[in-house]
Image 1 (cartoon, rainbow, N blue to C red):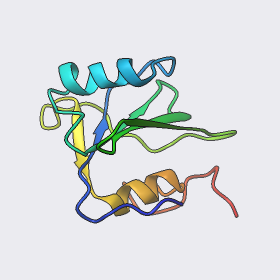
Image 2 (image 1 turned 30 degrees about the horizontal axis):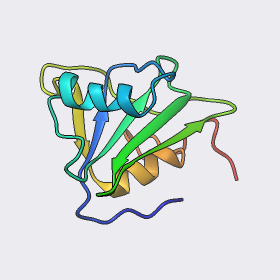
Image 3 (image 1 turned 180 degrees about the horizontal axis):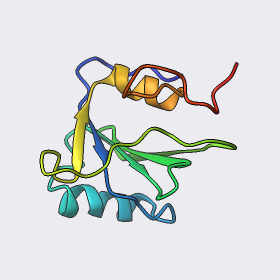
Length: 116
């Protein structure tokens, strides 16, 4: 598990993303679709339509990081689009850690695929 600073701003893109996108494609989504600045030190989280793959985009001050995770079974919990979220949701680093480690953020239970 990764540890993130408590001051890190994390934005989850609620719309499905084409996982063939790399640095420039994810940057364009964050900047133009979400209307956010990808170079402000925030972390952006994207998932595919099936929610079994995620990518993180992060600017560290010298360049972009792209980190990907593919589940072998099951899916990540992922919110849908609503009028309130307008394409992205800001989340806390603790919520990101839980999401990536198999915890359903709706009720705090482990996803069916998660077992240690």
